[in-house]
Length: 201
Image (cartoon, rainbow, N blue to C red; front, side, top):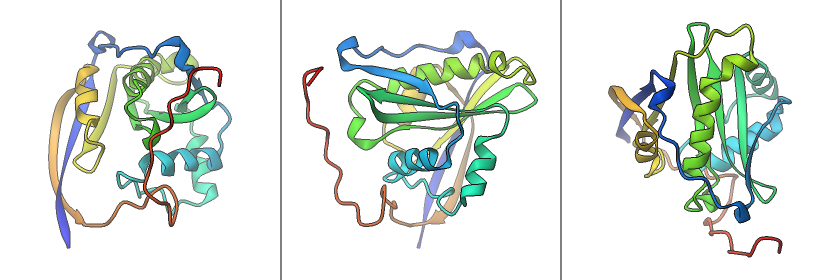
């Protein structure tokens, strides 16, 4: 069986397009750090943990060498959000020689959704896309930041992108196999929200 999937392509063409999201309160202990050392193991963990329930499957067959080759490309960056030391989500950026930077992947591990992290992480990722050329001297200054999302993505993804100032510039509709989401690992059970704990406990 197949299902109809709509894909939207969105872009910003000026840094002024960015509408920043709300910053989580300091006591929540959220920080965002670039994973500067390419790590196939860590990046695959983020990919499966964030995308397991929204049908991210294209990289599941990748070998360790494929991950290493991809992560080692100039202009490719992974920025990771942590809540009190625990990975909560990530943004992956990839630059091209024409001055475009793609937000290749963005998302939160399910247990961290709804905790006021997503808008902040996306804002930070967009800012890093716009200043990416400052960290990679061989890359030209960023002229455009773009991404795509589809009907298989999280239910709030499109609204988050539009709130941050992205505009749709193209839409496609394709037929794709109707396959269940793989989950974060084989046999994983239902996802439960994290318990609320005061900071410092």
